[in-house]
Length: 393
Ligand SMILES: *Cc1c(COP(=O)(O)O)cnc(C)c1O
Image 1 (cartoon, rainbow, N blue to C red):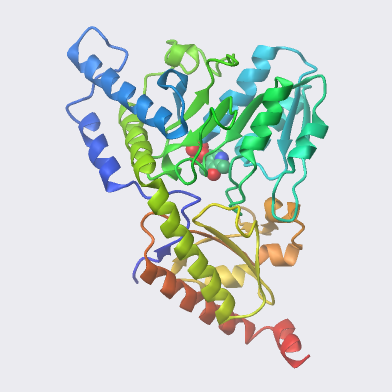
Image 2: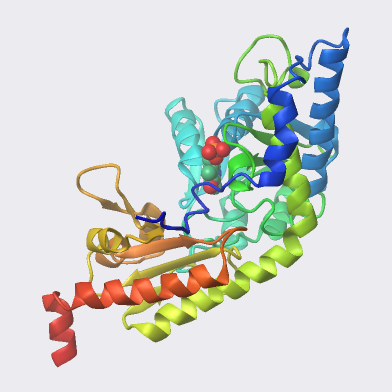
């Protein structure tokens, strides 16, 4: 049984062999602690970390001193949200976010809400987009922070980050964006976009798992936050704990590759993604696109299929590794809250697939996926009473 074709690049990506090459020495002879500045082992590690810091900063238009290394986007989001509110200190503080955010934003905010802070969750339109006018209307005297993702992990929809940033600047409100899916895939610039805090993750950009970063603006305004944990005072006191040197080196290398290859890679992925979309739509019927037709991540395609059940679809697609629009964590699959927020009905939401194309996806793979999806749909529908009813009507 050959390995299936990997189209789940929103869940995680393969480490780029060039990233792995950059990391190896730091598992081997370069094993120093980046805080041990008094000997050559430590200094070599520190130097590698500082190079990585520049590589990360460079990808998002930040300065290296604004980058805090973390264990990933989940931690970065927690540090940004809890850190800012802890420092603000006012129990009246108000935060604006959206209903389609990742759990790594929704859940820390839910906890903060239980502690008494005010949270407004904005709805989205049928494409999963936030209207900046709604952000503006939601501001109160107590608003201290807006947290809206740059790109959605299920439907790929891009938020108007620059407009939201401008609104926040005008109000003097901090703007955090979870950019785990957007970094390295679309151009991002924290200065041009008025971003004050930005979360990113290594394993979404062909780097290692368990490493990420939080961008924290230092000037205009200076963002102040409390750390999540206390210890040796690493990362300017914002993230104590011995630095994950190999991971950080890998994250840096991954960012450098993204910066270099982004324009060409994005164009290639858009072409492959559109071919996949058109191939499936032409090859079968009852297909609808979820998310925005154009304002979406290059590698993202999210489709719903009429007259099939979600589980049957996933079971049938043996040769393709994809995610479905249902949370399969329980015995009764719940339709995705993101698709629900767009107004997709539960049955269609359950019968949806998220295709995540990536750096290592080939044109041949896309052709086989088109063929397999159409074949499996036909097979399932031939047994489906609702499809037979549709055919005879
Ligand atoms: C993957 C992802 C996260 C979590 O990142 P980790 O590095 O795995 O903690 C957060 N937000 C979004 C949008 C993601 O896609």
